[in-house]
Amino acid sequence: MNNVNRTLYIPLYGKAYVSKRSLFIKDEKAEEIWEAEQFALKRKSRSKWLAFYMGIRSAVFDGWLRSKLSQKEGAAVIHIGCGMDSRAVRIGDLAGYSVWYDVDMPGVIAERRRYFTETERYKMISGDARCLDRLGEDIRGKRAIVVMEGVSMYLSESELKSAIAAICSRFAEVELLMDCYSVFAAKMSKFKNPVNDVGVSSVFGFDDPFALETGGIRYVGDLEMTPKHYVDQLSGSEKFIFKRLYAGGISKKLYKLYEYRKKQSDESIRCSYNRSRALL
Image (cartoon, rainbow, N blue to C red; front, side, top):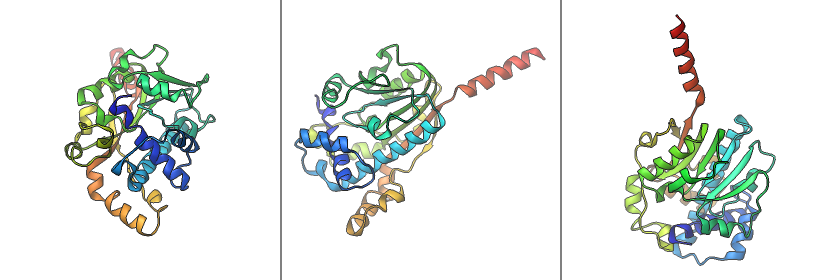
């Protein structure tokens, strides 16, 4: 795997760490994989503060996805840049999705196949996020719920818009959640970023969420990255330090969680209105 692909070990370690401590999420699969792999993370990459952040981020994505599935039963779930994440296991087979696609680079998917098995409802797809228009023809339908966790910072604005447009071209309705660095955070990452520890030296940031609107998808709003009810699971000095350094105002300016939506109904309403006008 290349350096960008190796960044998957950072959230994997974080989820295994918080799961063992019974914080934020229960992820026995992450514990199993980390125990087997024991990738040699260094310094910041193995910080417990970063592990807390990774765990809370995953819990927020999980909660958002469960909420959307309760509203959009039968939708396809597309997890772009899945790494070694076991979200499909955490969400569970009883969730209301029709099919779940975990998408990542060929080397990552080959690694995943050592720990995950495809079923009728769960598929692993080899694909570059920059070339999602080349995905198989089976990935299309009426509704899609898309998660892009820890992906946008490795794509330029044009590459990210191309990826979003490719998904929008395949589904009439799309719900999308992704985390993004700010431009300032991307610049500062050259000096202080855990991904530097695995050889990544260049990342991207975005300050204007509206600039990523494409293919009929629209910016809906920001989500809270570190909700209070998760931070409150910590205690003592850990809670004090995390709350001020990782969940404070400065952190919120560096790291964003953007929600987007493409709705077929809006276009249908316009078409219906225009047809009605034509009959007058």
